Length: 214
Image 1 (cartoon, helix red, strand yellow):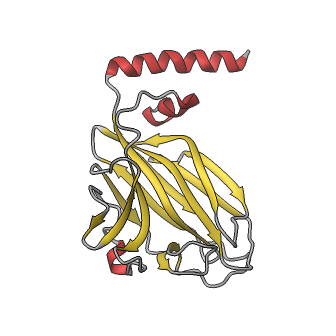
Image 2: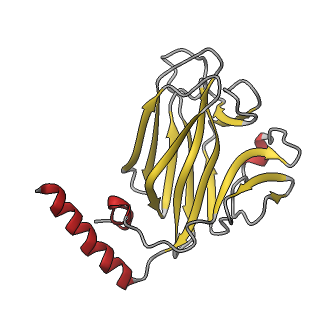
């Protein structure tokens, strides 16, 4: 059983500093959409609500031990996706048709000795263009940790929360990149549990699995 799977079972995690999280607004300090060039480093090792003129939200702290890597398909947009003032979308998508499944994808990676935990994200559809979106989170081995399917709200937005998605590396991805955009990805970091804690978690996880199998 991998560390990621162990920590995900039943949400049984002994967390360190889990309340301290970063909120990705994809905006400059003035509230404008950040440029494609600025996106390259946006979200890396966040320690303040403003870094290099780019804005972040704080949920009681930040994530200095987490970096983000975006695929070339990810772009930035202003108004038009529900009520999100700024958002990321699939800029290489060709149309809003159901045949266009071009995904949005980016990966959060924690430094050695740390884990990254996802908290929530807001998704919205392009005004008047509802499509069923599949939103997924994968670990470093491409194992699926989370799956949500639905039609994001095109008037306001849809808040997706994660019950217990944590690992050394997490990839966030969704299809219909032209039609569906996201904002306010909230994530936190925490220290890898000590070996004694892992032993306790392992025993608890096995007990939970046995209980479910009865």
